[in-house]
Length: 57
Image (tube, rainbow, N blue to C red; front, side, top):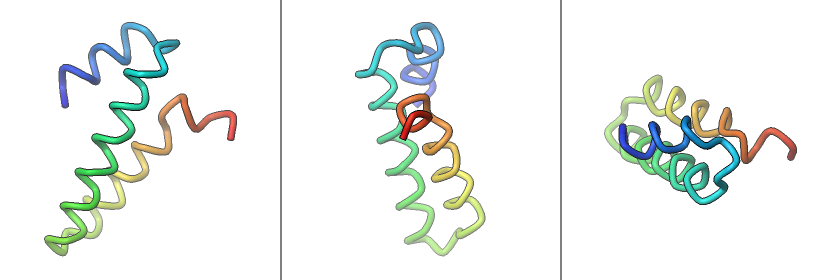
């Protein structure tokens, strides 16, 4: 996830990279939720929602 994060930070206007980063956070959140790590899952999902793709929704 570090690579996609770096790419997304380098070019915030690249919707593809932003989407990939948001999906990565979502998937991490789902795994953490399934493991019962709810606070960490919430943090991952919150990070997903901070993605620029969601700022204008």
